[in-house]
Image (cartoon, rainbow, N blue to C red; front, side, top):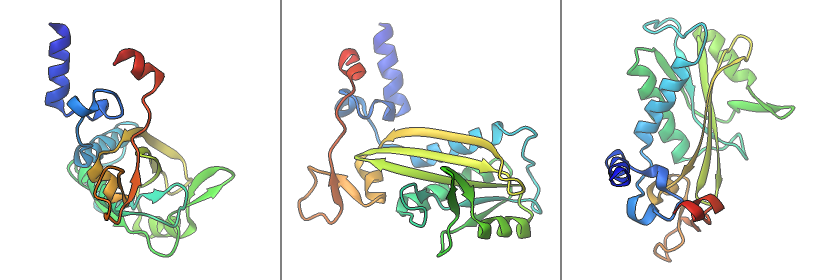
Length: 206
């Protein structure tokens, strides 16, 4: 009985947690980027000490376009769409937000293996008197997306909050990155990918 109730709770809650397992064809679901953006914003707001200040239009939070971890000068429909989801999450909690779109200049740079705000973004944050900057990167491996979002102090580049997640993307979200499942229509312009092989743990549990 407990097992049935647990499975029912997964179904009602939208079971993207089951994506990538043997239960995905029966209980899996789409990854809800709107809900995920709200969850990420909540985590980034809760972690900093001292906390961010809401209702401060003169001290906004800058939210940058998410970029490809393998090419920091590149983004996608996913990066732009998820930026909007993050903005909505911060605004709904009372924070003044300004969006930063990826242009020719880099938003983040790599220094000794660590990602730092670019000089242009630091200067912009100082001009806007921003209390924090939200930057993020993503890496796609087959259909698995590794997401990293950070809330950074523009004054000293200190990482004040972080959100890390591994997502098994559905077909709709894969298309935001220019990919599709391999069993889609052959003349589809999106690049095909295969679902990942189940882990040993999944094989034992499911």
